[in-house]
Every structure is written in C-alpha cells, then in structure tokens.
Length: 360
Ligand code: PEP
Ligand code: MN
Image 1 (cartoon, protein in one colour):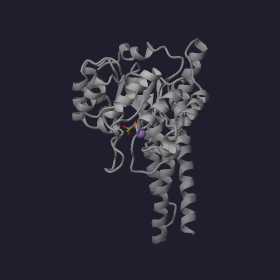
Image 2: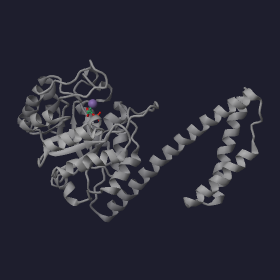
Image 3: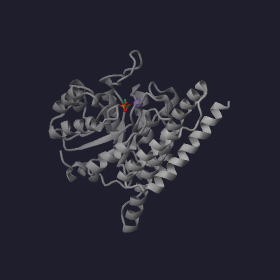
Image 4: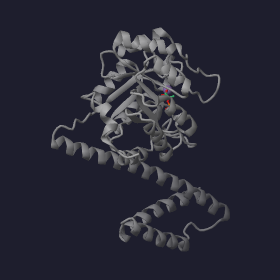
C-alpha cells in the first residue's frame, strides 16, 4: 500500500471548517437514551453519531451490548436528526447487519485489529463498500499490526479509509487508561500523510477531565478529527462511565480547542510550528519519564550497597558508562561535551539519591 490522495477524499469532500467529530455514547443502552443524546448533539459540530451495539468486554458478565435491535435505533437517529451514524463491527455477521441498516461509518475495534483472521473476515465482508471504514490501533503498540489491518481493507477495495488512535495498554500503571505513545501516530502519519487519522481521547484517558488536553495535543499534531464518547448522564452509563462527557461539555470542549485552519502562509507556518512543538512536548515527557525510571533502578542499587556496606561512588563503573555513552551520543549527532554534562548531572542526582538511602 502506498500513500495516495484518494485516501482522504471522503474527508476533504465534507469540507469541514473544524476537525471531524464523531460523538455519542460508548454503548447504545435503550432507544430513549440513543435518541435523547442524538437530539442533544443535532445542532453541534458533530458529524457522525457513534454508539456501540456489540461491546467487546474484557471480562464476561459485563454489559455486552444490546445487539442488532440497536441498529434500528441508529436508523431512527438518522431519520430524526439527519446525523450520520457509526458503530463498531467485529465479524461478518456484524458487518452484514450494519450494512443492512445503512450505518454510514464502521470501525474496527482495538481488540479486533490484533487479529489478522478477524480483520480479513471483516475486509472480505466489506469488500468494495462505499461506507467509511476506520481502523483503531491494536491494543498493543505494534505499528505493523495496525498498518497490516489498513492494508487488508485497502486491498478489499475500500476507498473511504482512516485510522483511530485510541492508545495502547501497558502493564505499568499510568495516568492514562491506554498510553498514547504519540510517536506511533507520528510515524504512521509520516508514512501515510493522506490517511485520515482520528484521535479517541476517551479511551486514551479513561477520565473525562483529561479529554480536553489530549484532544488539543492531537490537533497540534495535525490529527484530522476526534472521537469523543458522549452521554446525557455519563455517571449512569452502562459502560465506560468515567470517561464520557455530556453533550454540553462536548460543545464546550470543541469551543475551547485551538483549531488551526491552514488558509494563509502565516497560518501554515504556525500550524507547522505547533506540530513540531507538540512533538517536542511528547518527547520531553518521555525524557522525564525515563529519567524517573532510571532513578528508581539507581535507588535499588543504593539499597543493595547499603545492605553490603559498599561505597556509593564506584569510579570504574562510572568511567565505563561515560565512555560508552559518548560513543552512542556521537552516533546520534550529540557532542561529547553535551553527553558529559548531561551524564554528570544524571550521575550526581543518582549519588544524591543513594547517599540518602545509605544514610537513612
Ligand atoms: C469503543 O469505542 O467503545 C471501544 C470499545 O473502543 P476500543 O476498541 O478502542 O477499546
Ligand atoms: Mn467505550
């Protein structure tokens, strides 16, 4: 698969003055709930109304979706509000039902993207469709798995394609429900600059008060749109309650986001600049994170030295590290002077930590 401008025609044709917005509840719960939220979103920036009909749940016994009956509710949404509709499909039966009920946008969920068999089954079922098909990233941070899924759909002659970045699961506890690993999205964009990419801050954060910041970062990184879970009574939602926002909150978020329009050279320059700055911010956060991790390992060494009553400073080891890092630095275009200064600072901080531990 090669980058081609056709990929984003469906999006460009919408000629939106703002990023594409897909909003609606995590799950369709009742007909009243689906219609209530849709009417609340009718006269907003929302372009597609989402509702999960079949819900992939990590543990059995949780609410697994209302099933096919929900598709009738989505049809009513379209009739009553004019909103286009969107839902997740995870097998051939889902695809057939969704197409029968004229759902406008189908997405492949993160738990399906991990399985080439499932993705192929969905691609075969969708062959040649003129519906929009979006592919969520797989739950694990594997770019080729994500691209592989896109390629399977592309090969099935599906023209209106795009991806959704919903973050990745980790064993580590972080402030995110699914860590963004923005560099993966950046890499994907640089390989396929014309493949529309939508951010899903709801599943990345898992918390409604973090949605704005993640959405802003996504727009600064030139994402084409946002998928934000929206519910009239989020706390009572049957799934993903903590991350859903009210329709009013969604409208406020859209109003507060700095949205760049690339209309004049000045705006283009600014947009390029914020894009690069957002990349730097992502990397700086990673730097702090990794330095924190290094310090924790170093604390562990401090504990060991304390037990064995060994001196904190071990100059042989330190000189070996420095020599190696100067060479590594050189291969990355970093001067010896800079690498020395940086490692001295890191080393000093480690010594301070270990001193504290040994003398505690
Ligand atoms: C969803 O969009 O409600 C969903 C289940 O998402 P994901 O596949 O990203 O977990
Ligand atoms: Mn959800």
